[in-house]
Picture 1 (cartoon, rainbow, N blue to C red):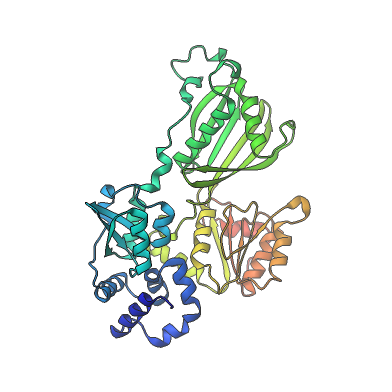
Picture 2 (cartoon, rainbow, N blue to C red):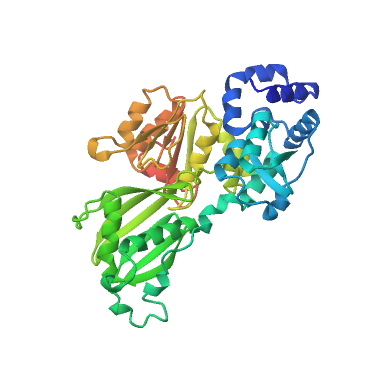
Length: 439
């Protein structure tokens, strides 16, 4: 605890008998790194069980700052002052602006260098108020300032002009890539932008007998976005295959590739998969937002009880935690949010994935490459020789992987993984069917 504000807060908590010196000493080895990752207020709640209200009151009295509940005022909060990264990094939110004074909500004790930095970034004098961890997290989700820069990007292509189902397009069959005023690359860019803005997890380009249907998977459900003339199919798929490093001239076997995109400062990693159908190649693109999809457990929609239960599972020294559900239900996002919460200098965390979806600091990530002999099972065997504390297996899809993962959980490791079942109880017969002993 090198930061003087943190030491002052701990001294105040000692005086109020809210924290014991022996418990603090016991957890000292993981304290500094945890505070750096999550902030001191949140760590006091999770590691020491102090109530959010007691923490906020202690901060207010120690540093002579007012308390404010900020959730209700976020719709009128000043926009375009702080970026998403700045809000997350400094754990602050702009609340309101009067003249040259900007009121900012802090969840942790106000550090002098942070206040000066915010003053420099914003150009305003900073007036600090304190709020609770829960209030801050709820307000942050409602903040519609610089966090929504992506939504301000305008469409460059009116896709309805080329939609074969649009009521005004009676001559759609005559529209070909040669006589339209946009290129296939521009249509591809527009589809990717719209998918990112709508929060879609996948884009499906499906060739039919007379049309190329484009659908987005949003909140787990596929929605038709546009149906383009089939004459666009070859050009559009060629653009996407070329960008993702897929062989454009090979159309008879499935292929996989990747595209990296940037919109409004957000980086998206796009997995591209091609599959030959009777009418031509179907292309599916999965969007993985590197900078915005790294969710916090508090933002995933857990009930308070289930959130406590899930956090208790993540704190276990060994065992296996399986997240189940259909495609697109958020299994991987849930596990990554869990890893992001528990990662630290005191744990050796290793993942084995196909593919590695999000890159995380302080975590060793292994990419499965079956064609080179690097399967889930072989990677798991090697990881177990690397002195791991926590292992994430991207998916248990065969008996060998399931058996090794279960054995690892029984021998002192915490294993996190996913299963494709429709509900949690379905994991039990699924694991038995994979050949894992019922005991």
